[in-house]
Amino acid sequence: MATMVRQLERSRDAGRGLGRALDFMEQLRGTVHELQSISKRMATSLGVTGPQRFVIRIVGRYPGIPPGELATMMRIHPSTLSGVLARLVQRGTIARRPDPSDRRRVLLELTAAGRRIDANREGTVEDAVRRTLGALSSRQTAAIRDVLTVLARDLHRTALTTMAVHRPPT
Image 1 (cartoon, rainbow, N blue to C red):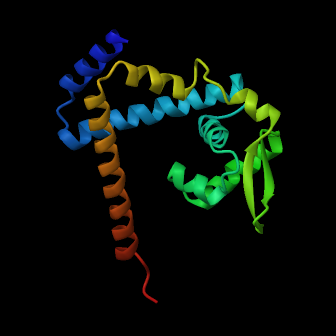
Image 2: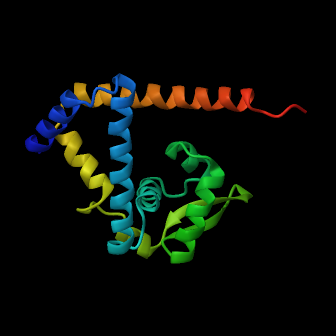
């Protein structure tokens, strides 16, 4: 783990002279690429992608969670989640059951197959994140979380501004 941290530090220090924003974006792009690669490998080895396993892990911790609340936790639009849920229900890892207090709503729970996937496993995105965070101090972890939170907020704000600017006249 210490070797990986040193490699990250060398990579950060080396930069490409693109400037702070583009150097940072290069690092983000590399991270996204690796997330996509490991997600594809997980689909082969576990039968679920990284995002699908994330859903299973959350539902495993919050049995009976409504889909809307799950989408909020995952910070994705409910319509994006509905496709993921449909595939997991079809594979028999997630079950939808009516909410006893409001029959119009559904609640999510893991099936036996879902519970088998809902375990700490090597070779998953979560495993890599756990190892990485284990090598960092709580201060470093908090700083990373802060940067990602601010970046996500600013990206959202930029998207809203761009939509307003490029909206066709009515």
